[in-house]
Image (cartoon, rainbow, N blue to C red; front, top):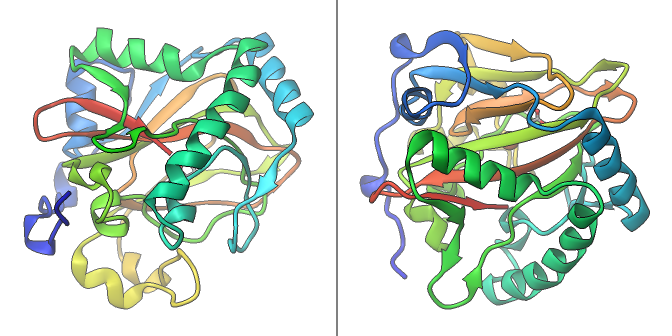
Length: 269
Ligand SMILES: O=C(O)CCC(=O)C(=O)O
Ligand SMILES: [Fe+2]
């Protein structure tokens, strides 16, 4: 598995073309989001209220754990590449297997957002879609149930920059999707800046966290969305973004999704 070098990274897209529209999922909107010419895709009514409530109830039965060494705290069920960078590939794929069993129990008694999203992306965009596969270790884990209630730092989610030694770092663009299962009484909005990560930004990275100094987005336009229950939102996660703190539970199911150079769509967490 080769490392992705900075020179091989796809160039960041400049903002002027980043249009102010929210679109439903089609081949055209997907291509625009990948190229950073659209801010958001929203799939209204992705999950019914009953499905959302059932998933939250089953997740609570299993119990959330906190992300390791993340402040402000974020609770989750599932495993993430983010937390395994320092630990290693082997451990991630072993944990992924256990996490999949727990996930199956939750989804069997509510609904399966991964399966639903994979078939939706595939049928609406025409791109072959599935959970990312490692050539040595098999499937990645995809689909954490999360509670981001104290907010996040300003950050990106972009494997070519953050996780260069993993095969998913071969993607040419990365998006994040979230289905909002439970929304807080107040707060919890998501902000996405026009500004995409470039290698020179590493000077703005906070030394002890996943966050970036706000100077990196100075003067950049920002879009804010207030999530709506049962709807799925997709955005380009190479763009700097953050979530506000909230009052009350804010529960989502989420993963990363990338497009490979040969136009396959792959999901992982
Ligand atoms: O919960 C959200 O609205 C977005 C969280 C986030 O940072 C992500 O999905 O990459
Ligand atoms: Fe993020």
